[in-house]
Image 1 (tube, rainbow, N blue to C red):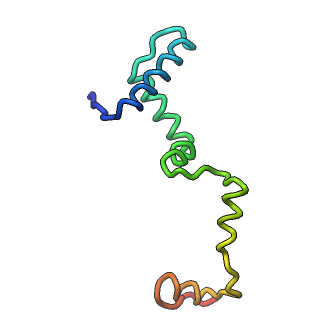
Image 2: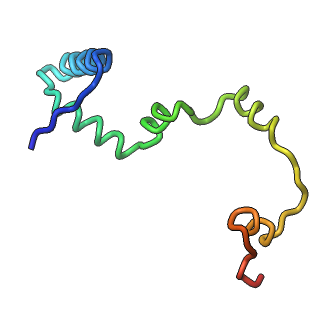
Image 3: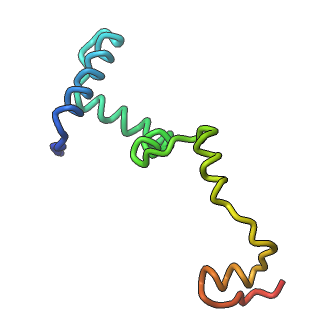
Length: 97
C-alpha cells in the first residue's frame, strides 16, 4: 500500500538533499521509501531526537535555561502524601502508611 504525505516545499527540499547525500555515500540511488523507512526506524529506536525537534526542548537543558527554571521554584516545606493527594485529586489518600 502506498500513501502520499503532504509537506511544505522547504521540508521536501531538505528531504531530497538528505536523500542525495545518502545516495552519494551509499554509491547507489536511495528511494524516498527507503529514506522514510530508515527515518522511522531510527525514530523508533531513539525517540528523544524527534521529540526534542517537535517540542523545541532539547535535553540536557542549557545552564541558562536550568537557572531560569530553578528561579521560579519555591520551597513549601514538608509535604505529606495526603497533601499531595488533596492537591492532585481533591481528596485524601486511601493508603495507610
